[in-house]
Image (cartoon, rainbow, N blue to C red):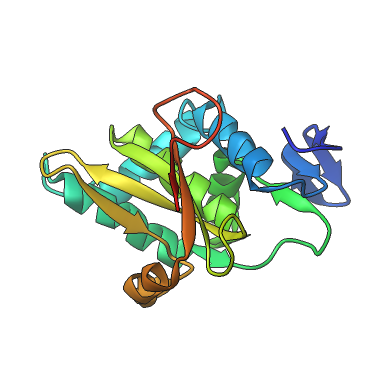
Length: 198
């Protein structure tokens, strides 16, 4: 978990209803990715009926067994409903998928950073039975990670599909600039990354 992490329970701040979230000092990508995995698996992640209902509404018009269509429908929804913004300078904020879904349903759009986008996409993909992974990437020195996104696996072809609304239509170019990465499987509960390059 994040160092110096505080779990803030459901509360009311002024007239705003604030759901639980994790807030802590950034201690590195491994802690953040482990927090993301735990939240994606949790009661406010893959097991959340609110997130499931949102996911069902996103894939409802996709033909049955069109798994790539479901993956792309989730990506397109998250591209239009999740607006990227940075975390605070010295704070790592990781909202859970249900918190993000509640914001989308209440306000139409949720302001999130790349870890929350990846977590939401990964959770939605798992809810329709797709294998999902988090990829933390760097663009400079090996091990200097600065971005995270989700990769889903289309089951018929076993192709990995990069799902990164932050990169938008420049996903291919972004992947070309990657100098190092680590892949964290959401279907494997062993700690740490499962693939690392270089």
